[in-house]
Length: 301
Ligand SMILES: Nc1nc2c(ncn2[C@@H]2O[C@H](COP(=O)(O)OP(=O)(O)OP(=O)(O)O)[C@@H](O)[C@H]2O)c(=O)[nH]1
Ligand SMILES: [Mg+2]
Image (cartoon, rainbow, N blue to C red; front, side):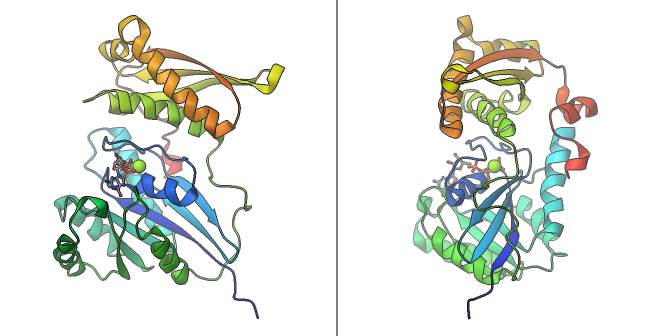
């Protein structure tokens, strides 16, 4: 008799910058969630679907849980917290370099009501000496009854296969939720806007990365050769930020466009033309109507 098909939803939660999106992209084998060294990179929950012969695992990458300073931050934290109630397992990811902190306790408190298995994932083990792992494990295991504690490197891939194996063994029997060729729940349009935001994020500093939104204005397939023409707008909060995004004689915007184009071409598998605009939308991160327009509506919790 064949073993029953297993499936389930697995939420990846943790403080900002611990490597949640890096992990998801690695297991899916394609970039569907953007990554950067700036905290609070991910703003929406993003599903990544891993389909195997005998199982389907739907990972939910979530925004890092932090102390919100504006309405966008409120949205991000609520999105992450609310996934806890709708999944079959939770991966609580921490950074091996950092160790236990107040932000983790805040998350552990939220995990108290979760009845499904919770796994502690210690990421970035490529950055620490193996001897440092034991004290770290001790620190966490006294604070919560984890199903298992698994150290990995999402960046280099260490122990990731083992983690997948363990997760699979804990999933319930269930249907294949998504067709096997589907890898995410978000449309290409969303991923394209995110790839542009990622480049702006990687190329800027301080408050600029956090004050940016990207809106796709138009996507059009031009008949000849099937190339795709994309128009998008980078939204900033202030005029000074707009100046920085444009750069000297447009140099910054040009660089953002050049890098984004490479990723978008890899995503779509076709040549693209990317036209970028920049506009100011004062204090958009605190304006409910703007937040809804940019895809951060309370219905998305
Ligand atoms: N050395 C090392 N770096 C890692 C590893 N995993 C992720 N990183 C780096 O950590 C940074 C943050 O990675 P992300 O995947 O964007 O982190 P995140 O948890 O999704 O962050 P938010 O979306 O802001 O919550 C990036 O610079 C990654 O390259 C790892 O296993 N080892
Ligand atoms: Mg992320």
